[in-house]
Amino acid sequence: MGVVVVYGATGHTGRFVVEELLRGGVTTVASGRDRNALEMLAAKWGDIEVRPAAVDDARSLDRALAGADVVVNCAGPFAVTGGPLVEAAVRAGIPYVDVAAEIEANVATFANHRGARSLVVPAMAFYGGLGDLLVTAALGERTAADEVHVAYGLSSWHPTPGTRAAGQVSHDRRGGRRLRFTRGALQYHDDKPVVQDWVFPEPLGRRRVIAEFTMTEVVTVPSHLDVPEVRTYMTVEAAQDLLGEDTPPPTPVDALGRSDQTFVVDTVIRTSNEELRATASGQDIYAITAPLAVGAVRRILAGETRTSGLASAGEMFDAREFLDSLSPYLKVELPD
Image (tube, rainbow, N blue to C red):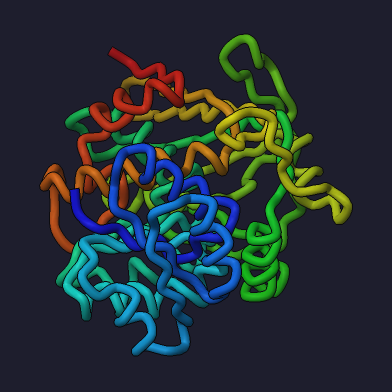
């Protein structure tokens, strides 16, 4: 199967990714900045190698990736870790996968590494990757649409410390401005948020959402599909949780370490003559990132990719087959 290095292995999402790899019998190396935290978790996981490394130390990154077949970057803020780890992966001649939800970090990855000699798959996560797979699968062989709308129906959103840190980095880089993707380009703006209704599939039904709660699909979807308008929406309750200073981090409620958060990702794609809808529902937005990232790793190692260099999930993989494979974790409904 190969050797997979998980950078940021001690973080909330990194632990999910490591455990998903270990369940599949994949030789896994835990890497990151904190040797003590890595060794404590390695003792829990059992037979797993630890290779501490810092993103500002290229030699330590090279040592961490020596002999590996893929690296998965789970360490935010990705504005800090993404560039150095992609470059280290290219030096090592191995594929790179990350779970970045930061819009600017993903923009930089697509801008700076499009011609990479190694495979590079950014945003292979709940935000960015899942929506991109849904839109791509719904379109089938078509490569263009007039509009793409992605609505997140989250029951709640208890952010991890990593989510908060990444959000602060993005906020600071934007100077507090908001983002939209319209007329084929990302645009910064100062418009106040608009609240509207979105009718999710039952049992969620009609919910209040914040329009233009812009997330990573505004980077991944138009990276390979000709779509001039990509808009994303978030349920009001989840947005309030995220913005609340006192909202606690996720609390595990099952043997897999998942929280009780549930989600629906509802995508609506409009073309000149039809409207298509694709939906996915499941539990815990952080936990679902693990089978997405590990699914990418498995396909890369098996040679089940559709292009070379840098590409989003929908361009790199067979979107419908990938979504079908997630049935133990996700309920997916796609158009015929």
